[in-house]
Length: 345
Figure 1 (spheres, one colour):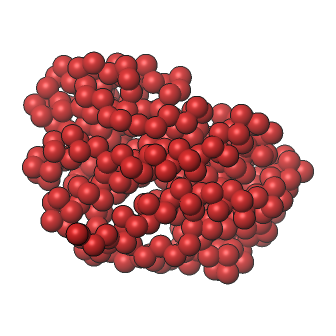
Figure 2 (spheres, rainbow, N blue to C red; figure 1 turned 90 degrees about the vertical axis):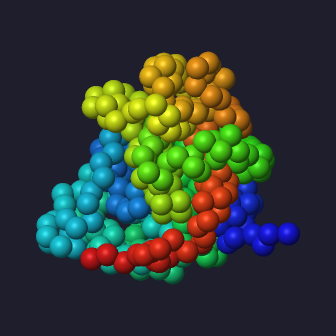
Figure 3 (cartoon, rainbow, N blue to C red; figure 1 turned 180 degrees about the vertical axis):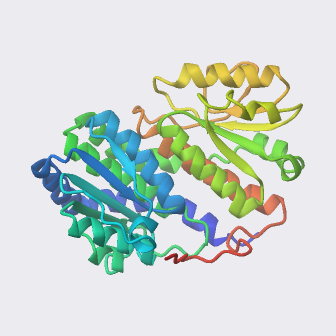
């Protein structure tokens, strides 16, 4: 029997990690949400890189949809390299990092705190420099993550941020959906899309591929594209379904692989339309919607809420991409040229 990779074990731990976060992390989430209510920020700034920046993009959509507060990503180099002083007195600032170690992210958070922002850190290490730079800390409670490719820490950062925003906005429907999420994630990580693996394994290394989404699912499409690169050495590019026809479609030829991560939300019909169009042009299109006809439908676990559906989708994607890497003869635990903690200045 094949020994499991660290990545596979950590993917299987996602449901338990999310349940632990929602239980053990509740008081920290409530405290930070109360601080946001009291501050009533006019802007939420985010500071992150890599998978954590994809989490920040997802939380941007959640925040803007539920609270109406606009969200802007601030490049960490603004403080660390260029020495600029952000004007964030009427803002909140959310820093996200699995390790909480990268000097540029820590320095940007300190600059935001000095500027008077309400600072909140989401990290898997509550003793890390990032945690010490913020007024409020939301530990991910993910447990040790050994594989270089982040999986359970990405999911727990999404859930921590969603719980914070739901509590801030007083959104009972989302809070109820989050309570049900661990059981749904247990089903989601059991899906690994063998039909998509069969399509991509022999073809995608040479020609690349697209990963599509819209709104919150576009954020997880960015994370999926990153995982294709770092675990499978596939040049995958993420696009909003609203943007893919504005130029990128020119590279789509016969058999070009396209994965569409489609949630049950207001954007579903539009993404399905784009998928059908690309399939009619000869692309090998796969997506997570029952509405697809020409494009091929992948199994998915619906969660009953538009903002938790993408969390379920990325969990299934992780199970898929770990097996895809092994099918391509690559150890997903040790991507070449990468290490677990990346520290940039």
